Image (cartoon, rainbow, N blue to C red; front, side, top):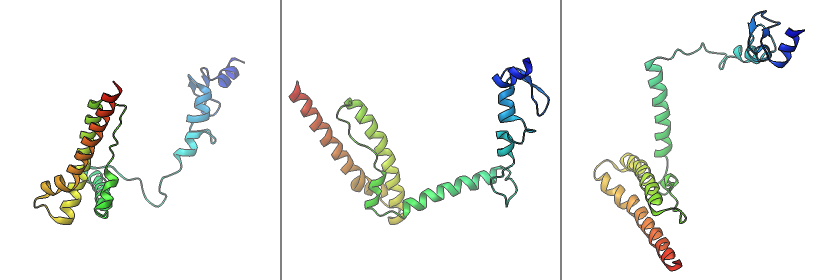
Length: 162
Protein backbone atom coordinates (compact mmCIF):
# COMPACT_ATOMS: atom_id res chain seq x y z
CA UNK A 1 0.00 0.00 0.00
CA UNK A 2 2.79 2.47 0.91
CA UNK A 3 4.57 1.81 -2.42
CA UNK A 4 1.43 2.65 -4.40
CA UNK A 5 0.82 5.89 -2.48
CA UNK A 6 4.47 6.83 -2.90
CA UNK A 7 4.27 6.29 -6.64
CA UNK A 8 1.14 8.42 -7.05
CA UNK A 9 2.28 11.29 -4.86
CA UNK A 10 5.90 11.30 -5.94
CA UNK A 11 7.46 10.08 -2.70
CA UNK A 12 10.31 7.65 -2.33
CA UNK A 13 9.62 4.25 -3.80
CA UNK A 14 10.46 1.58 -6.33
CA UNK A 15 9.94 2.30 -10.04
CA UNK A 16 7.56 -0.19 -11.61
CA UNK A 17 9.62 -0.20 -14.84
CA UNK A 18 13.27 -0.38 -13.79
CA UNK A 19 12.57 -1.74 -10.28
CA UNK A 20 15.04 0.70 -8.71
CA UNK A 21 14.44 2.97 -5.70
CA UNK A 22 14.03 6.73 -6.38
CA UNK A 23 13.28 9.74 -4.18
CA UNK A 24 10.53 10.98 -6.48
CA UNK A 25 9.15 7.90 -8.18
CA UNK A 26 6.29 9.61 -9.97
CA UNK A 27 8.66 12.03 -11.66
CA UNK A 28 11.17 9.31 -12.46
CA UNK A 29 8.52 7.06 -14.02
CA UNK A 30 6.96 9.78 -16.15
CA UNK A 31 10.08 11.73 -17.13
CA UNK A 32 13.35 9.91 -16.56
CA UNK A 33 12.97 6.15 -16.61
CA UNK A 34 14.65 4.76 -19.72
CA UNK A 35 12.66 1.50 -19.43
CA UNK A 36 9.27 3.23 -19.56
CA UNK A 37 8.31 3.49 -23.25
CA UNK A 38 5.96 6.39 -22.45
CA UNK A 39 8.37 8.51 -20.40
CA UNK A 40 9.43 11.88 -21.74
CA UNK A 41 13.13 10.97 -21.71
CA UNK A 42 12.61 7.80 -23.73
CA UNK A 43 10.69 9.78 -26.37
CA UNK A 44 13.22 12.58 -26.73
CA UNK A 45 16.38 10.57 -26.24
CA UNK A 46 15.76 8.37 -29.26
CA UNK A 47 14.91 11.18 -31.69
CA UNK A 48 18.10 12.41 -33.37
CA UNK A 49 18.24 16.02 -34.51
CA UNK A 50 19.43 15.05 -37.98
CA UNK A 51 18.80 11.47 -38.99
CA UNK A 52 21.20 11.66 -41.96
CA UNK A 53 24.35 12.47 -40.00
CA UNK A 54 26.29 11.12 -37.09
CA UNK A 55 26.45 13.39 -34.03
CA UNK A 56 29.03 16.12 -34.53
CA UNK A 57 32.07 16.07 -32.30
CA UNK A 58 32.81 19.52 -30.90
CA UNK A 59 36.41 20.52 -31.42
CA UNK A 60 38.26 23.80 -31.83
CA UNK A 61 38.12 23.74 -35.66
CA UNK A 62 34.40 22.86 -35.68
CA UNK A 63 33.59 25.57 -33.13
CA UNK A 64 35.74 28.09 -35.00
CA UNK A 65 33.96 27.33 -38.30
CA UNK A 66 30.56 27.62 -36.60
CA UNK A 67 31.38 31.03 -35.09
CA UNK A 68 32.89 32.29 -38.35
CA UNK A 69 29.76 31.21 -40.23
CA UNK A 70 27.62 33.21 -37.79
CA UNK A 71 29.87 36.28 -38.19
CA UNK A 72 29.82 35.91 -41.99
CA UNK A 73 26.02 35.81 -41.89
CA UNK A 74 25.91 39.04 -39.85
CA UNK A 75 28.39 40.72 -42.20
CA UNK A 76 26.51 39.58 -45.31
CA UNK A 77 23.28 41.01 -43.90
CA UNK A 78 24.98 44.31 -43.01
CA UNK A 79 26.82 44.69 -46.31
CA UNK A 80 23.64 44.12 -48.35
CA UNK A 81 22.01 47.16 -46.71
CA UNK A 82 21.89 50.53 -48.42
CA UNK A 83 23.22 53.63 -46.71
CA UNK A 84 19.67 54.66 -45.77
CA UNK A 85 18.94 51.21 -44.35
CA UNK A 86 21.73 51.66 -41.81
CA UNK A 87 19.14 53.61 -39.81
CA UNK A 88 17.75 50.20 -38.79
CA UNK A 89 20.80 49.90 -36.53
CA UNK A 90 19.97 53.09 -34.60
CA UNK A 91 18.32 51.88 -31.39
CA UNK A 92 18.26 55.01 -29.21
CA UNK A 93 15.06 56.83 -28.36
CA UNK A 94 15.19 59.83 -26.07
CA UNK A 95 13.11 59.37 -22.92
CA UNK A 96 11.89 62.74 -21.63
CA UNK A 97 10.84 61.14 -18.33
CA UNK A 98 14.31 59.74 -17.58
CA UNK A 99 17.15 61.59 -15.91
CA UNK A 100 19.58 63.41 -18.18
CA UNK A 101 22.33 61.07 -17.00
CA UNK A 102 20.31 57.99 -17.98
CA UNK A 103 19.58 59.38 -21.44
CA UNK A 104 23.22 60.33 -21.92
CA UNK A 105 24.39 56.89 -20.83
CA UNK A 106 21.97 55.11 -23.18
CA UNK A 107 22.82 57.50 -26.01
CA UNK A 108 26.53 56.88 -25.57
CA UNK A 109 26.11 53.09 -25.72
CA UNK A 110 23.84 53.21 -28.76
CA UNK A 111 26.10 55.72 -30.54
CA UNK A 112 29.10 53.38 -30.14
CA UNK A 113 27.08 50.42 -31.41
CA UNK A 114 25.67 52.37 -34.36
CA UNK A 115 29.11 53.75 -35.18
CA UNK A 116 30.58 50.25 -35.35
CA UNK A 117 27.90 49.12 -37.81
CA UNK A 118 28.42 52.23 -39.93
CA UNK A 119 32.21 51.91 -39.86
CA UNK A 120 32.09 48.30 -41.03
CA UNK A 121 29.59 49.20 -43.78
CA UNK A 122 31.66 52.20 -44.91
CA UNK A 123 34.90 50.21 -45.00
CA UNK A 124 33.25 47.51 -47.08
CA UNK A 125 31.62 49.88 -49.58
CA UNK A 126 34.00 52.86 -49.67
CA UNK A 127 37.36 51.64 -48.36
CA UNK A 128 39.18 52.33 -45.13
CA UNK A 129 40.77 55.66 -46.11
CA UNK A 130 39.32 58.44 -43.90
CA UNK A 131 36.64 56.08 -42.57
CA UNK A 132 36.71 57.65 -39.11
CA UNK A 133 35.94 61.10 -40.52
CA UNK A 134 33.26 59.78 -42.89
CA UNK A 135 31.47 57.89 -40.13
CA UNK A 136 31.72 60.85 -37.78
CA UNK A 137 30.38 63.36 -40.31
CA UNK A 138 27.78 61.25 -42.14
CA UNK A 139 26.34 59.14 -39.33
CA UNK A 140 27.35 60.20 -35.82
CA UNK A 141 27.20 64.00 -35.91
CA UNK A 142 23.55 64.04 -37.07
CA UNK A 143 22.65 61.72 -34.16
CA UNK A 144 24.54 63.94 -31.73
CA UNK A 145 22.70 67.01 -33.03
CA UNK A 146 19.34 65.26 -32.59
CA UNK A 147 20.29 64.27 -29.06
CA UNK A 148 21.27 67.83 -28.19
CA UNK A 149 17.98 69.11 -29.66
CA UNK A 150 15.94 66.57 -27.63
CA UNK A 151 17.95 67.28 -24.51
CA UNK A 152 17.61 71.05 -24.72
CA UNK A 153 13.90 70.96 -25.59
CA UNK A 154 13.31 68.62 -22.65
CA UNK A 155 15.38 70.90 -20.40
CA UNK A 156 13.40 73.94 -21.54
CA UNK A 157 10.10 72.16 -20.77
CA UNK A 158 11.34 71.30 -17.29
CA UNK A 159 12.41 74.89 -16.64
CA UNK A 160 9.00 76.21 -17.78
CA UNK A 161 7.17 73.87 -15.42
CA UNK A 162 9.21 74.92 -12.38
